[in-house]
Image 1 (cartoon, rainbow, N blue to C red):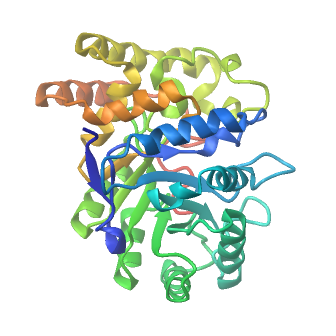
Image 2: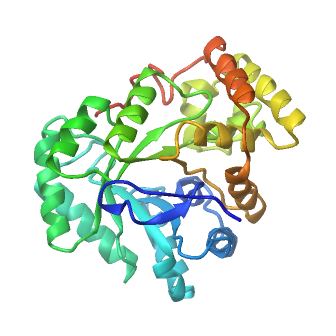
Length: 339
C-alpha cells in the first residue's frame, strides 16, 4: 500500500503519496525525452495511486530549452490530451513569474501574464497551485501574496505556493494568506540551517514542503561520476558541485550512504528519499524521473522505514562530510535564496 500524506494551507484536505514526481528534466535538457517514455513514467505514478489520493506533478513555465521555453507545459498538455481521465487524478504545481529574461517578475502584471500563459498551455487541466519561482526583490512578499490571493479569488488557480524562500519570508507571506506548499532543495548533500528553519516553520504553520532535487540532481544515486556523464549542454555541467575536482571530493558522501543502503537492501537513491521523508510528514520529495523503472523505484522509497539508529547514522554522515561547490554556481547555502 502506497503511503500518503497531505498538502498544507488551503490544500490540507488533499491526499497525495509520500513521493511526488518532478517533471523538469523531461524537457529542460538538450535532448528532450520522447513523449511515449515520459508518458509511461507519468502514468506509472498515477497507476500506483491509492484510492482517494492525487498524484503530485511539479512543472515550470520555463522548463524548456530555446526556442521552446514552455516545452514542459506542452508535454503535460499532450499527456492529458492522451489521458483526459487523469486530469482529476493529478495535483499539479507550476512555477512561473520569471522574465522576460532570467529575473523574477512578481509585479501584478508579471504574475498575471505568467498565470494566464500557464492556463492556456495546460488546455483544460486545472492549475491547482501556482508558485512564483523566486521572490522578486523589487516587490514585497506581502504585495506578491495580495496579487496571488486576488487571482485565487478570480478562479485562476486554487492554492498558493512559494519557492526558494527563507523562514522569515514564509512567516510574512503566511500572515497574508495560507501558503499551501513551499518548494526548497532538500537532500543529504543540501541540508543547511536555511532548510532546517523553513522545514520547522512550515510544520508549525501547517505548510507542506516540496523537496526538489532530493537525489542531488542524480548524483546521490551513484550514476554521476564525472562531468561528461551529462550530455553536452546540460545545465548541470556548469554547477560548481559537478566540476571534476568537486565531484571527486563529493563522491565520499555517495560511498558512505551506499554502504548503509546496501546493508538495508535498497538503492542509494531510495535511502536518500527515505531520509528526506524522515524530516517530517509534511516533507514531500519530488524526484525527477522519465523512466518507469526509476519512477517505481522512487515511489517504493515511500515505504522504506528508517530506524532511529539509521537516521542518526545518516545525519552524522551529513554533518561530517564537507560538500564542495555551491548548489548552482556560487555559495552553497544562500545562492538564489529569496531572489
